[in-house]
Image (cartoon, rainbow, N blue to C red):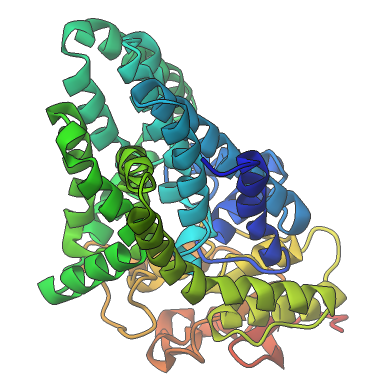
Length: 465
């Protein structure tokens, strides 16, 4: 295998440091939730949070900060995933396959669409418990496997498919597996019941999740996104083909169950493919080693790896150059975060201790950059205008299952010092001033600044800078 592969592994994982001055959608949401947790606020009860709790708790380790703390945490997480991939592949195949699995996982957690690979949202955060559960199932340790599946469910509800794969592998140990799963969920459920969080948890995580899952996209879109993903991950697909005769039914079941969540709602978001990455890496590592036994196979794998490297590698170099020269990136994909930083600069120059903030739109990076807390339970516009963030830039049609008007009535009871409309300039039909029931509330504020993508309001009180 590659000489000095641990150094290459560290270099691949450390590429995320190029994003030290940026926040990406989804990771900023969990950072903002973590910021509220470290200030004593409880998710679901004190603030709206539509994901299981471990994602926010994960980012609470760094106090909800971006910058160096965030990116070093990212590097540590990627290395932990690679270590588990190494251990699993070593038990399954051997030393050379283990090295290949670790390097391939690090490579493909770096070289794909940035919005899908860099932010460790719930799909990325599921990779670690996913690998841990399969590793323990492979070793026939059902109790610990069940505990890992429970941890996965506290990160992402799609871990139910991981649990299903493990249950198939552990037919003889199902009672112990079930005991581990139940034990891992018992304490969080007891805490939730004691704090009376379970009704809100159901409403925000499960009911809201069904709204997202109900998004219907065309079959053509799904086929195109699958083809795009497989095209950039062709080295893994080729490895599977080379190793096809050594892939038994249990491995095939793991792969099939990992692919199943992609079909939920026909959404096929790029980040959803994190679910299928572990089985492809572990199974493909065997074929990668087999292919590299010949010059032709080595050339094939090099070419297939060069495709994502050539497509996504230059962006890392560009961001590193921007960081070294202390200049703002001009990358269009980062436009929202660049605007959030401009908004934060204005608010940070005006804020005082105890000030609060409300952001209309889905712009949690503004909370992270200002370190301000929401004034109430709602801190983005999705529950208030009824349009989920995955479509609110193009559509203004509210989802009928979302009680948006009732939620806006709760917003009227709050008086944040600052209000940011981070959606109206992107979709005028959903501008904050387009909702009649919020008109009187908004008149308490005056427009104090406007960035390229946002309007900043401040409560009109005396004295008001």
